[in-house]
Length: 65
Image (cartoon, rainbow, N blue to C red; front, side):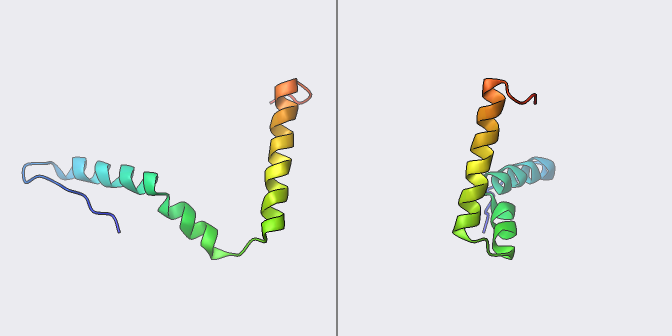
């Protein structure tokens, strides 16, 4: 649960901006999407390895980004 401390004279837009920033930093939406379906650890690991290989190929110049 996110709690935003707002002063009496603070504008509602500023409070909303603070809330959005806090919400983004907490990564709540990311956690919700991740919990919607189970992904096996082996599949996660394979994705990480493929991503690392892709980044390495871009760094060496084999693939044009």
